[in-house]
Image (tube, rainbow, N blue to C red; front, side, top):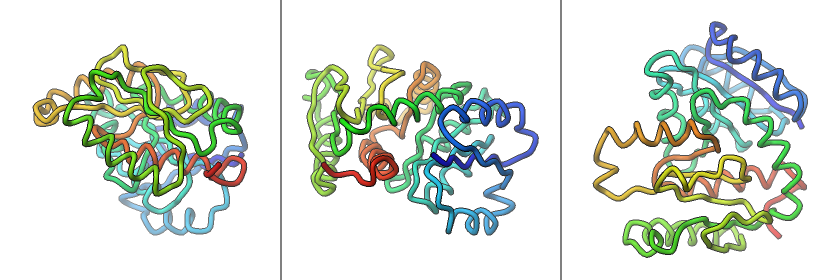
Length: 249
């Protein structure tokens, strides 16, 4: 596996260098410093013809770099928050809350070394999981109007991709799990898949809700944005493509 690790500033080396060392257990690591704000053309040129497998992008503050990488490349992009201010809250939100179509596998502040273990776990699980999605959600939450809306449009996208979908309250070891998180105990930090906060309108309208999400993300696992399970499907698609040559069964 070829892993391109890119950070927005050389001053982030206290995070980027240990991260690169940990990633060597998962594959061959290439490292560069390229700012999405200051060197966008260089980044576009690098990723346009890059023939590797996974991108790991780290930045602080507005943390545009992971999302820009996801918009340029069709490889899986893992986002690393540099805690320049607010404990990395702004960076975490910038990468996790990407709009539909540009998924970033975002980890909580301080959890960047989990990426290597995730990639190794994916390599072991993919033969059984390829083309299979499993939605992890409680029956009680699944019956709510806001969950029904999210599940309906996510099922529609999965059907377009010709993926086999199951649903239940437990993790499925032979699938890519999409985990709908409504409370801390819903988190499955070591699971092959993606988490997303599933929130009702009242919670979505309150800025302070993201402080709760920030703490959830620090517990582990990889995340996409609130009520954006479709980005989790697209994230799964990117992972399926780099292992065993495709996503469908």
